[in-house]
Image (cartoon, rainbow, N blue to C red):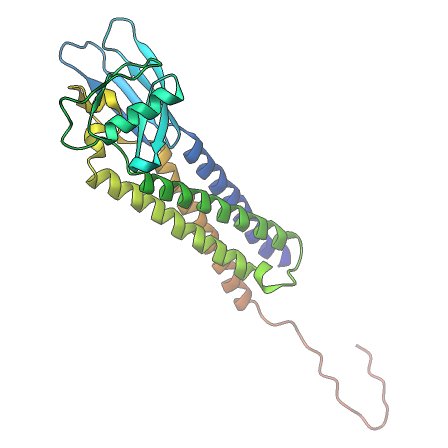
Length: 268
């Protein structure tokens, strides 16, 4: 029965590894937000997708499509982040600063940013830097706790723990924290997506300053976090199931030796 019980722990380790991989892909991939964009007279829809760090803008306004890499650019002093396809860091910072102030930068993917200050925008088309930083912190913490959970699971599957913090109870608590952080990240981004106006401007100057018809949605990078949370929940279920099955096991047999004064030797 010991092998079967350790099998539950090893299965929890594999699920933790799956959760880690999913979180890493969610962080590194470029599809938290995806959208099609089209203007009047445009034959093919343009495509936009980006993640926490980079993205891609496929512009089909002209006959020849133009592919541009997007970079998440933040200006902490303005509490603003936005995607920019400018080719230099200085140009990207200038563009995001202009958007944060409500101005209209020239929508080109070049190394220079020209800004029109005469016709300000009613609402700055940017993402809050504080929100972005906190979201990134929560997702990274979720990944770290998933790593700790995997480490404790593999330790407990090959040896008996000697310290309470390294026991299966510690593994259970690490998984609970991982689930909690994942839910917080999902709710944060989901609520911000639904209420902040991000769906209208997508924090990208081409969209915010253009007349595109959009079909925005949350991409697979966001939904991967749900799968990671489910994997951690399955970990918790496996550990609780193992504890339940151990409690159901009958206690080991005991031998009752009676004290006989005549010194008779009993053979078992």
